[in-house]
Length: 270
Image (cartoon, rainbow, N blue to C red; front, top):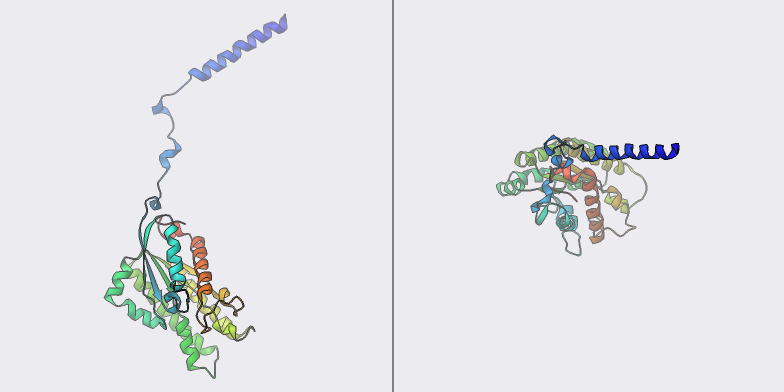
């Protein structure tokens, strides 16, 4: 009998708790703000036209691409159509075969080029290879590391000037700049001083990209070691279509790693 009495009392206690839980409410005005109040729709939610500019030398121009798809530049620009925030791509390739850093500075002083730079959202650039080749041609039969390091100091100053000129025209564009590779690796697979020279020139380009704050450095030196993967054009200097495909994939990979959303101030994402 005692057990039955305790069960009845316990049932009343539970009923009272449930009633308190049900009827103890607060008004909507007294409740804490919902988490949704802090949610912000990203800028890339509404796609917009994106202008892409190519600057520099033959690698951005796409020389050697037997498929005529404008090298890495054309391939990356095409892939950008699938990025978040992109309504359509307007790609303008201003790169030219043989262009050195001093010649790029001259180009950036032209009014029509400046007008193009001002409207760019993303700028792809390769520069420095022809600066090095000028030294190779001048010292073909007595090639040492010294003239490359003499020129490296001058190249660093010109590269800094290039970035300053671009930023003077456009402070918001994402700049994506590639490093250099060693075409002499076709001739020999032995380690030599030229590989160290390439590393130091690439370091100078990467440091410039880091200092800019809205730029991304893309290393490509490992993509063109010898020609076992058949990535060179018949001139054994420029990439072929396969080589440019590898470059394009590397560009997209590194842009993602650099943080496209942050670099573009939230306007683009992959």
